[in-house]
Image (cartoon, rainbow, N blue to C red; front, side, top):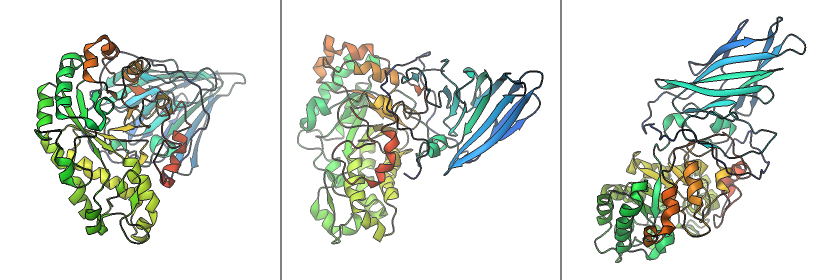
Length: 533
């Protein structure tokens, strides 16, 4: 990543807490009406004797009044640039010595805007906050507009409150009141993209998945020994036990395929699936569930790679390069390679009826495949990160925007806008990730803290996952859900649709290291920027 302005390094021991307003699901549609890119520049600020107006992106985003003592107030507007990051500060001060100044205004944002905290407080415990519905927390001092990626906030110092008041068509309104010895109103455009360093974050081009994601995954239950009968039995059990509580996804993981690499190996199930891979989506749907499937970007046929050397990343000798976990790496900057190897897999699976796609080993393609052989891209004068992104762009184009795509595993900032969710850490449920990437959830994508086993030590994970609005996938043997051991999953329902209460990460120790993504050459374990357990 190229931009790193604003990353904090302080590690905070935090209690994961959730402030929940009325539980309502997002009604956002997946389609986005093109509106063009917002400017990475300051807003237009007009200040009169008693009033203030702020316009940005061709719209009024704040209108209000300013009051002070008999002598009035002074206003100073400054624009600061750190690299590409723009921060515009409006300083309001009373002319009377020892006086106070008061701002009463209305902020107007788009349909994806929400009240929040924009800056870390220097006093009191900092807790992770997520909100279902509109937030009326007294901690809010800002409004973030996701659709246009700007934040308007009041700096620490004066008393301040931001209260949602109403929605007007596709616009949402908030009343803001601030009073103190001085008031600093701060506007930051391209907040996540530039200030937070997410180069590919263009929220005006895509919407967050509008519904909760809850269900079951086969991995911990059956590993790669999973059979057709296991999936049929699980579908029957889920339909009777957990579907009434909103657990409607059944995702088959590793173990069904004939091999990893050529399209025919992915599209032809092994002998454990006698009725073929195409049988399962229909059966799963017949039980009222959504069928999901695991895939992997590894390529393991050496003869095929040798016959199509121009389609694969090569080593210093000009031969197809090998990497741990991924074996041979398809060069997705070559359209013919993508057309022959990637597109047929996902087109075929979508045609079968699969509706949820987990794409695994992406970190290994990037690190062991691409980064470790960066000279391949330099010599060919191809963009390495662009090639990596092209792989997943092809996946998205083939499956469409109406199905969920999960990137796995570890933080994948270069895939922002292409994947609907991201497994933020390694295998095993991550409590820490809920604080390390809290501000990403349902802003950048849906966080996946990994699947949950309902054993004595982990069943509490269902509650915190539900309240934070993250992906909630169970992974037990299905018979367990007919017993009392399945009760925590039922009590955690429904999984909420939330937005973060903060647009910063409570524990920034991981997201503050995103600049290292471009220099990693091994993904064999969690890296400094991946969520910890």
